[in-house]
Image (cartoon, rainbow, N blue to C red; front, side, top):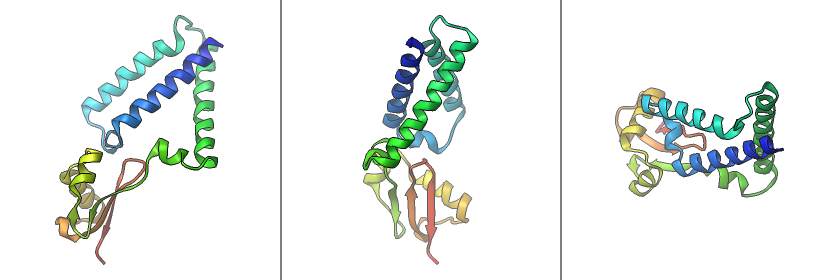
Length: 147
């Protein structure tokens, strides 16, 4: 039972840490982000397994993490407000070609990040051509151009 409790605890801690870190961490991975993820995975491996390096222990940990993910998914699906609490809500960063400095600062997204998404997804090179730029729950920026 200790393995199950360790797995659930680490899952919740990582969920909270990435929630605090914000969706900016999901936007684009740099070399630093990749190294950080690798270090986090190594650190959590020790917390998850402790001194148990058996195949059964690893399998039980994996099954517990998958079940935890499924349970959180069900919570988000059936309990109102849990989805917004865990994943957040979409945030309008640019409206009618005008960036919202408060929302950009709150989400730690720069105008340059918005323009990268605009150029890559829509071929837009001027912010005035963006009707809406929305930071989605998954960390991607959706660009809606003027028609």
